Length: 421
Image (cartoon, rainbow, N blue to C red; front, side, top):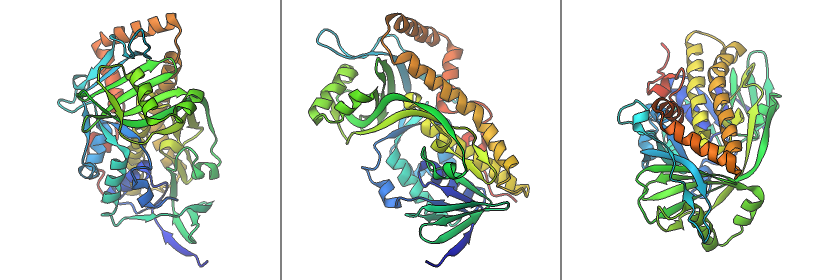
């Protein structure tokens, strides 16, 4: 097969939510990018591809507005309140659902005026919006379906040989290709982490009573259970169960699974009916030992995969996008080599503290709440009540949930990167 060579400023391995958002951010800054993904774009846009939804923080939603993506999304559900509590599994003697003592947040904790805590958006709608916006940008070239078969990391550039025979050259390649990242492996970057022996069960339900824009997360002995409001009085469910139990649940009939959901919901939202297929994913922690090597840098799940307990997985990846794009655009404006380790380390250092803080916090919450030990349960319930009574503590957690903590990149402030002069 004859080879053809193409030159770009940045190669992006992975055409998912993080990869396409990064391409748009770099394009806004005047950089020419190539996005390589093994799946056809049409497959990623199918409703059956992925049933997840994202609780997009107000800061990351600002970036979507700045990049022109938000206008293509269509249906978004504002999160007006978040209620966190211990939970119960129902039995003939008592109802399931959240306990009466909750830690609550609303937009007043953010200090951003009328801006909600965040927005619930189905992932397929984000993908469709990104696809539409990318199609308008001449500086972005997509190679899909295609995949990298060989990667040469040289002194002055990286060359990716694709299965199609094309060779793509650039000063730097970004691994935005998920937990099993090909780029990370080829660069020899190790990971460390552990399994939680939990499986995430994801689906969408329709409810009898109005959810009023309230997101609920309550903690059951087997793991957290989140009810995340969607448009048309539906909710995305992120349900963590012991893997052995989850395997049994996934084989149940639709009606039996609805009964299991009702036992956990309680009756405060009325009757609950499945409104989508049911998906499941193993839950684990996976962190890259380093985010950058000469000519190679990681973003999103390729750098950090965390438990979904706080709903921050995609938000972390989008914050990576904002920081990495700003660093690379600034480096180009200064005439620096985009693949130089000193440049890439500026990004890694910018994002490392925030990511590690959130990863450690999520891990601690999983271990603290995924049990039914009576003294521990009493102490954590008391702790939720104490935090709820302290305004500054609530504001601290709300700012983290919204993604507005630390030294924010321009895109997370709603500003444009702009092309360098």
